[in-house]
Amino acid sequence: MLSRLFLLFALVPFLELYLLVQVGTVIGAAPTILLVILTAVVGAWLARTQGLGVMARVQNDLARGIMPGQALIDGFCILLAGLLLLTPGFLTDVVGLLLLLPPFRALLASRLQRHFAVRYASSGTTAEGGHFIVYGSSGPAAHEEPRHAVVIDTQPIDSSSAATGLADDTKPLGDAQPSGDGRPRS
Image (cartoon, rainbow, N blue to C red):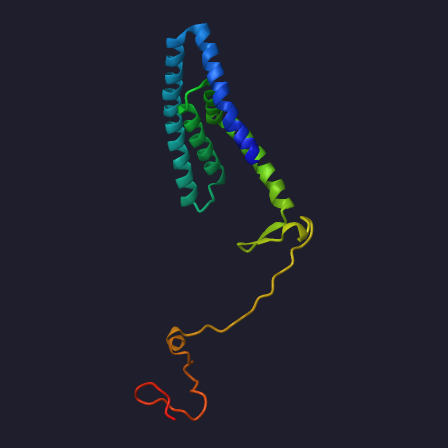
């Protein structure tokens, strides 16, 4: 995964530079620069307007007590689109514009959900009652019931008696009674 990211960050600037030079030779340097600036301005405006709409959806879902899963995915895609559109270059502009299209975001979201569902199921991770249990490779398969952990039930300790080291209903060991200065009498 890390090697793919490194390759992506190493190749994209070279591809962007190549595309800028090729477009510049066809339409000229000034129109190329203006086109890059125009896509940045239009992209920032589109990302802002769509981002405000997503924020309203998130607030509406939260007010109704619904987890705003799809709205959060849309918000992340719009944020990424805005960043890509502000980056000079045509390749990043195309990807950024695609991320601003709701059908493309829906397709991307469904593929990402499938990808993570497969990874989640194969990791042996389950969620029970709000707790996540990770078994790793030696844990149960996705079709098996998870094993339950041993629970040790204890009594709470009162913080006032914890400071002295004695519980309220206990006495010091032996016949020694504390003197007025706190030391045991001998």
